[in-house]
Image 1: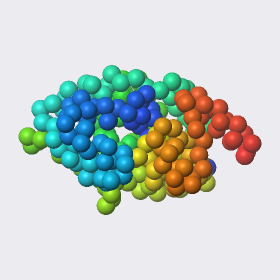
Image 2: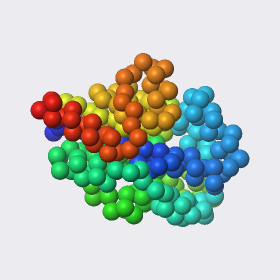
Image 3: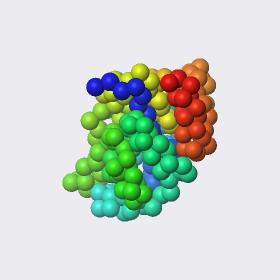
Image 4: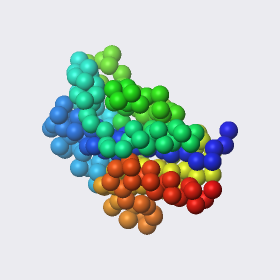
Length: 216
């Protein structure tokens, strides 16, 4: 099936108001995250390696605490209205997270948004051992979740990417239209990739409404 348009949206720091995953790591594994997160953000360590090393330092017994912590993270203003806007137009809203499926589902369920997204692509966790083991069905040599592979699952005339940080670089480079904020802005400047800066999802909704009306 081919769509006219598909929207691919990051989760941590994009749908949530803060970089939820990084904040979680700083809370539950402060020493390891202090050492490894800067290397990840500076692109001196791959996302795949960084995810496994940081999560792999947390005892499995604490996983329920992590999910509880994530569940109460606030979402960015306008996301509910944005999801409704896309749903009304029958445009798929695909969540592509460099984090974990459980975390995405916990937040979306709390805000009664789980049924408004078309699909969620993110990593998984094994809690059967003493320490957490992160794994992904879409892992590449460098990425824990290869977001471009998720994008390839959808044929569309226009692919829109929304993101904020290092996990969104390749997704943004592969998109036809990009909405970027925070660290992603600097990364895309370095790659000479055009983008639109945004503050909240009402900004994105209004820009897309204008763009799509003009293109109709």
